[in-house]
Length: 62
Image (cartoon, rainbow, N blue to C red; front, side):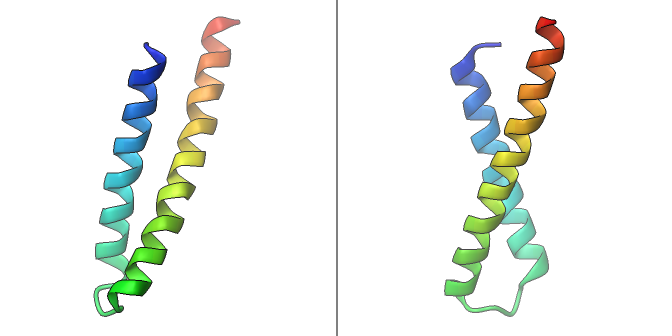
């Protein structure tokens, strides 16, 4: 898979996941808190996906 396409998929999944988690877990929070939580969830999902994709890449190349 192309590297740019993989990066786009990771960013898209992290964005969608962050939005879904923020909407589901904090409906009564102010918008500033939601923005900070989205950032935390987004980067957490990005790093988790990077670990998973890098392990899959390593195992398929070996």
